[in-house]
Amino acid sequence: GLVAGDEESYTVFKDLFDPVISARHGGYPADGKHPTDMNPANLLQEKIDPTGNYTVTTRCRTGRSIRGFCLPPSNTFEERREVERVIVKGLLSLEGDLKGDYFPLHGSRSYAPKPTGMSEEKEEELRKAGNLFQEPDSTLLLSSGCGRHWPDARGIFHNEARNFFVWVNEEDHMRIISMEVGDNVDAIFKRFCAATEGVGKVLRAEGYDFMHNDHLGYILTCPSNLGTGLRAGTIVKVPKLSARPDFKAVCAKLGLQARGTAGVDSVSTDGRFDISNADRLGKSETHLVNVFIRGVKTFIEWEQKLEAGENIDAIIEAAKPWEPSGGAAPAAASSDPEYPPNGLTAAVKKLPEWIQLGCGNAEYICSEKGATFPGDVCPDALPDLSEHNNFAVDELKKDPALYDKLKGLKTSKGVTLAKCLKTGIDNKGHPNIKTVGLVAGDEESYTVFKDLFDPVISARHGGY
Image (cartoon, rainbow, N blue to C red; front, side):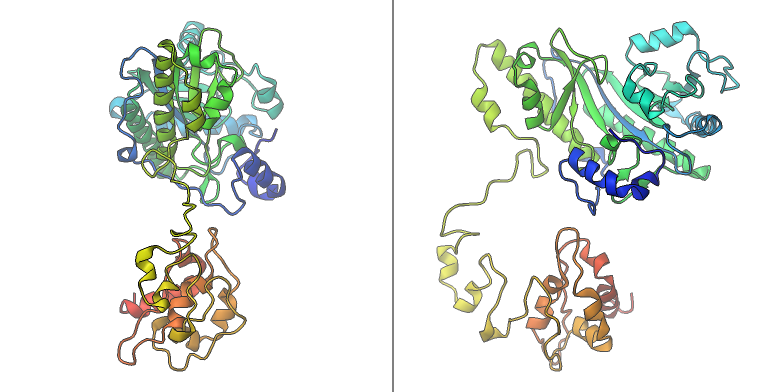
């Protein structure tokens, strides 16, 4: 129900976009940080379809927008042509197995080397193969403004092997697609990564770059595609599994979504579905591809069980999406009162009480050892630090206002200055051995509390 007209739309209208993004992306916070990981080495090395009987084609696709231009809902006629020119120049510079040619839509007069676009026969051939977008026959696209001036400055680039495609000026400036017959996700993703990096490198050499920020990842027209913009999908034959009335819920249970083989609004009548990852934002590219790999592999295993007449209700009930911990969601916290987080183990109970106090679920508070600084919220004022000997306290003594500046801040994961500083306040240190007096509670601690960390790091590392 909402599209961006340009990159700035997400900030100017953030009071509307932020809650819409949060609702669409499972509670993604307004201050969230989006991770990126395009390293193929981090993919699961598993065959989706060992028999080769269920998958038809597999693909990875993403969108990219060129910074400095309006997005397709708001492009002027001239601007859209300039976007085409910039992108095509970059694409025609690709080499090796990515080398190919650009074909404007039939009837487009925007591209001088092909002044009337590709032939109608070529266009129909690409569409029948599922490699070219349709004309804007959806009111979603027409109402958004993406159909204006059609077909001018729209087209497709493909390599000679026709397993790498780039759509130009459809819903986004670019849709980058890597695909092939079968289920070789590793090869598809490697080509996808090489193509994305190759296009980006050429654009940067021309003074352009992709729209991207740490919060929303890659910026695209529709908020549903923010973050990675990535959809790893396969057309898979699962007639028995898809006949279940709860099939949509089963997909969601494994972090997947299903659509008909002809696009987002299409339906399936023969048990063939385009199954892909459901999430885009808040998880990295390799994370989402792994969710897809494990999920579709599981679907095929379930289809085989149904073919054998087995009941899979209990298996589905227990199923969870892949997690980076190694393929299963983390184990639930123990309910044992003699084990963390509810209690202490027998071995810990044998230790002195001052040690036991730090091995449970609560912050370490031990008056016997002088460990009384809170670990959650900073007090209004620091205690007496005259006898302390560590780098952190030295900085706080040099600049008393620094504590007041930082004490109310916290990272996106909730780490406070108190958590970082507690060890340095609780421990005065040795008169002849200077300790650091500061720890990081998460990666972001080094930036949120940089006014304290930076001088401490410099002092500890010889002026770094």
